[in-house]
Structure formats: structure tokens, C-alpha cells
Length: 375
Ligand code: FAD
Image 1: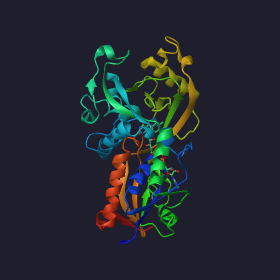
Image 2: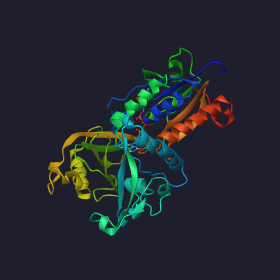
Image 3: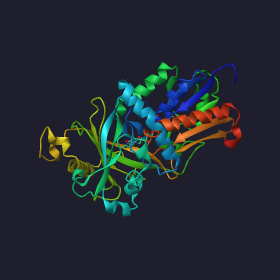
């Protein structure tokens, strides 16, 4: 490959594919083509990224790959919040409220929140201003909690910003649908076969030829985008409405509105918002965050919340956590980066750095540590 650029096809234009493509496209060694069925601007049940809140609330258990990816993502997300206003990421005061009874539960939401709500979590040393809340700062029904500074990303602006960065650094972007992951190598814009394919197809890696990862499953999330401002990010350890229902609130940067959530419904792919769940989300949100209507209609009920739209997205959940590794399939080197569940934004930079390292290993011939198998 010496003497010519290394041709890389990035398959997928969600937050994982675009962050990876942006990072690689800044490196002059690479000639990047992005191929995807869905692009920023699309809203589709097969495309998770636009539906995310999105914020940084680390949920990876200490010592896991996910925790490492989350830890490594914070510096760049916070730098963007500080220095790059057009990326539409801002800092927000953040609180997590805990109920003792949720710590005994093993349902989807309690499991999801387990690390986040620990008394002395690993991320206390990562995010600024971490402290435990005092009892007078807690809403009714909660015994403890923590506060820190985190970031919230306006995904409607951030995904196009990522794409713009890729274009600025010379990447080519094409719509395309592949049936087998190796086929992406033949769609490189140079007309030559790509040296490496980066597989960032999210949940679709469950059905994509050459991958068919049966560890993947959809984790349905329902959200409401509202005009009201919370000026605070709020998350609770659980709800009384079922073990797959959650309460979280985050105000997006740059007029992006406030996201109210939600749920984590395993193996449910229904793209239609459930109106009863939407009512529960509104009621729970107002109970823990009266600030939503404090200025416009103090003391009023959920009717004072001004709804922009309801939405449903499918988190690409994977039983053993995200997959970031390399594999030779037939004659094609593939680096996989998928299965980022409900944490794709907060682990996006860590994942992209890891992919870049794996691409270097391939180029340096350190191929032995990867898996090899026939197409
Ligand atoms: P996707 O965004 O699904 O992108 C997959 C890409 O691959 C698409 O471009 C698709 O078209 C393409 N593709 C797939 N198959 C093919 C094919 N065969 N041929 C061509 N192209 C193909 N994360 C956070 O960090 N913080 C949050 O606050 C947060 N909140 C969330 C709230 C909700 C309601 C939901 C649903 C998710 C949330 N997430 C959050 C999780 C986050 O959205 C996902 O982890 C992330 O979007 C996954 O990105 P991805 O790029 O892997 O997949």
C-alpha cells in the first residue's frame, strides 16, 4: 500500500460511522468513502442516531471496554462544548436521583443505571464538579443522588456537523445498501477495492451478511421533544411504572428543545409512539423537574408542556457490550464498531480511537491478533 493513499470504506453514517470517518479523514494517509442507507437528516426506525437525546451519562461497569470508551470520549466532547459552538454541544448542570428500592431490582432500567448511580462511581474523576446531593435537594420519593457537570448534544445539528467535517477533509459520501459487509470494499469512490472496511452498521449487523451477530437486539426507546426548558439534566434510578420505564430529561444546545424520556424495551421494534407511555413520561418528567413549566405556567399540569414531536428509536444493544475488533473475511479486512446500545455518543470518540489503532495494526501487518475466516 506504500506510495498511494489507503482506501477505507466506512459503512454506516450514524454517530459511530461519522466520528470514525471524521477521525480517519483528518489523517492524510487515508482516502475515505462513507456508504450508508441512511444519512443525517433522515428519521427512520433503522437509524438510531437522530433519536438520541443525547447526553454523557457513563453507564459502563468499571473495568469494562464500555467504561474505557466512555472515559476516552469525555475529553473531546468537553473540548467541543468549550471551543466549537457550531458542533451544538453544551455543558449542563446534571443530577441523578436515586431510590433505594431500585438498587434491589434486576430489570432492564435498573441494570442500565447500576454503575451510574453507584455511591463512588469511576466517572466521578472524569466529569467536573461531582458531588453527592443533600437531602433538601432531592425530589419526593428519592433518598440520595449526585450532581456534576456533563454535556448535551443537539443531534439534529451535530450529525450534519460531523458529516461536514468528513467532507471538509476530503471524504466521499454515497448512499448505498450492501447485503454482505465485504461488498462495501467494492463501493469505494476510487474505483479500486478498499484496503479496509469499517463496519458501523449498528443494529443492522444482526442481519448483515458476513456478520450476523446474534448478540444484538433492539432496545426500544420512546422520547418526547418539547419546547419547554429544563436548564438541568435529570435522570432517576427507576420508576414505579414498570422495570423497563425510565425518567430522563435533557435540554439540547442551540435551541434544540428538551428531550423527555423514556424506556428501554428489549426486543420491541415497534416504531409507533405509545400514547399511554407518552402520558406517563410527561407526568414523571414534571414530577422530578417542575422547572419545565416554572416560567410559563407555574403549578399547572402536563398540558403546559409544549410538544414538538414524539419519537421512537432502537438502541443497538449487544449482550456483551459494544464490539470493536478486526477480522479478515475472505480477502477483505474488516474493522467492526457496533453494538453501542444507549451509549453511542458518550463512547463515540473512544470507539473511533480504537478503530484507528486497529487500522494501523492491519497496515503494519500485525494481522495475527485478528480473526481470519472465509467469506
Ligand atoms: P445508527 O445510528 O443506527 O447508524 C447505522 C448506520 O448504518 C446508518 O447510516 C444505516 O443506514 C447504516 N446501515 C446499516 N445497515 C446498512 C447496510 N446494509 N448497508 C448500508 N448502510 C447500512 N447515546 C448516548 O451516548 N447518549 C444518549 O443520551 C443517548 N440517548 C438515546 C436515546 C434514545 C431514545 C435512543 C434510541 C438511543 C440513545 N442513545 C444515546 C444511543 C445512540 O443513539 C446509539 O448508540 C447510536 O446512535 C448508535 O449509532 P450507530 O452509528 O452505531 O448506529
